[in-house]
Image (cartoon, rainbow, N blue to C red):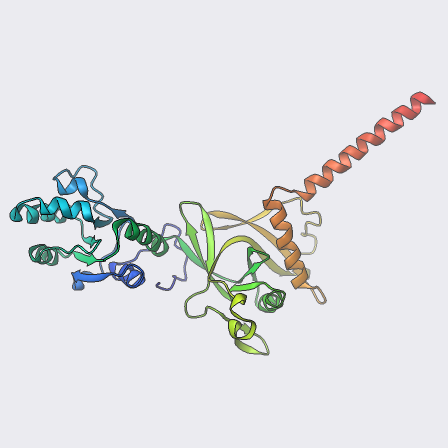
Length: 334
């Protein structure tokens, strides 16, 4: 998979046929049949499409921007046509701007179709995978490549099953806190730079490390360390849903701004998704590892529907109501 860009791409990331071919070469068992010089062509819609109706000559609402997938049904229909008509039907797809074709289930295009595609600037790929298998796997890879994404300077950890991102000024202890959490059983997702991907279908965010830094951490005074070599493979995760952002700030910078009760629910907007955000003041002697673990546990309770502030408020309200009733009862009896 290609590296993520360093700037926010809220509308999705542009990628080429070459990117798709490289990302799916092994998993999709792809073979380049035609169009090697056209691999830099951009895939405009990261979705697969079966051009069945278009092969019959009906092009209304033809999704030409998508990856055109030709499986058993399409191959059987093409074989039923006279040779000249086969080429004409394929040329019709090209005339309506389709430029990327994938033959599934071991099917291959004829020589004339290959030459016609090359001349039109198209690309033809082939795979032995069954059509339904290819469609499922290709959809996942296309979504991964084209998903809206951004990179955030921060460290992401899986804490008690929750994906938590630490952000804040350098020197506030993000990596050291992450190291302490890993020793407590948490797992590293990304250190220093976290790549965020948005799943458009679910409107959820997922964090991961870049390919070049995955599994590594930088600790001041120690240097670069390879986490799985030190703590084992269970100490790292490939990708995790982002469910909480913890912002570290110096205590002197936020005096008077701290919500001691936690009644105000803060959020951090990332790629248009609002993520719960907690500010933790950093000062000498504070146990950040314990605070982060507790914040993660608290957030899990909130996600499960339990609101401690509302619960306490309701308890105090009931108690005050009972006290008033007892006072009125006492006056009547007196």
